[in-house]
Amino acid sequence: MTFGLALAAADHTNLAGSWQLDPARSQFGYAPVKSETLSIAQTPTSVQFTEAVVGEGGKEDKVTYDCPPSGQACKARHGDQITFYYNGPVLVMIETKHGGDSVTKRRIQASEDGKTLTVEVQRLAPTNQKNDTLVFNRQ
Image (cartoon, rainbow, N blue to C red; front, side, top):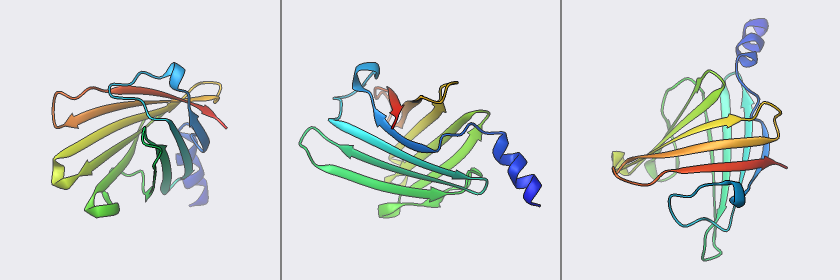
């Protein structure tokens, strides 16, 4: 059993670590944030994703999600739902808020050398919203 879990974990890129947003290398669909930090921990049965964002007003918003990477939705704050699954080396995160009124899909992938992390942010609902491509450096 342990061998099977280790083998499953080996199929996915290691995204674990702390990552700091590089605004100069990122493309923002909306106003850029002052700073953003991601912390990711992975096991074969869980992804723990912590995001700390400091907005233009200087207020920090921090949230942690801990969900299986199986494609099953798990509960988040305020009744929101988070879903994680792997698509090859890419970790896909879907965040559903307000009963589906707001849906965001993130495709998270590390560079081959493991020094940067690219997060493609696609806003699925409401429609006609601008997307982001965020680049993070390993801390």
